[in-house]
Length: 318
Image 1 (cartoon, rainbow, N blue to C red):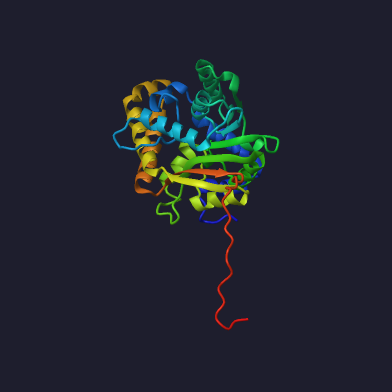
Image 2 (cartoon, one colour):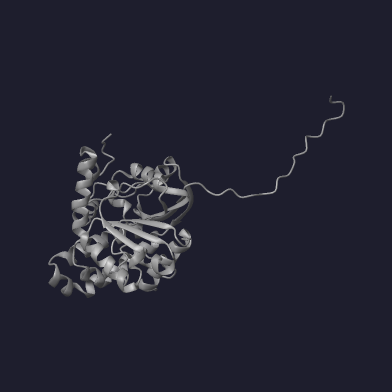
């Protein structure tokens, strides 16, 4: 039911049919990521990770923080030789290529941007992993995948662009094999939202800058995951790291403003404005960043069983 609690983009999405909403997401979200990769190479790290890094100290550089994030994702997913990994919203392939270089899995990615796919595959060839990396341009809801066909599904900074979250989690549960893993790294509203969902700043980020976003409370996301039949294993708060990541991106936009404007007039202003608003939101914790790990069933742990003695009878009891 549509209510005042929903943002303008959410209300508009709820008035569209599922097919119309998928087409809307395809069109408006892709616009942001279709800009020349040279621009993003001036702003992001060398692997083009358009998501938070993991900072241990506030004075660390972006490369160090992103390398730690990649390593943390690898450790959480524990990909074994031959396992199949699907990265939904893979971008320029930052996670896929890191995992392909450090494990022996088979990697599949989807993106809404043809330019992202081309750049990701170019980088895969340079890294010598192209034979194990496959990327397609399509919406996740258009995928027709066999049940129990993947060991890992990953969303890094991408599920926020998708309106039908609950349906997507059910689809993920269907394609995961027993003990398969789901990892999400994305942003959420706090339980008692302290910001203004209808503010000009919120509308600017959700519509003008990024095309379409739907933030939910962490408890809602966890509920979607559990109702799909998956078990929550771990939730990690990366909010402060995202504020620092955005600070590094903003510095890079400022340093490269003239070069960015020469390629795409007006885009440096858009980047700096939306990143500044986002940084303040994370710094004030009116938006939160979490990494969630879930599995499709957990292996049972064998433990010794101990017989329980019956309670001692009181004197005179029959």
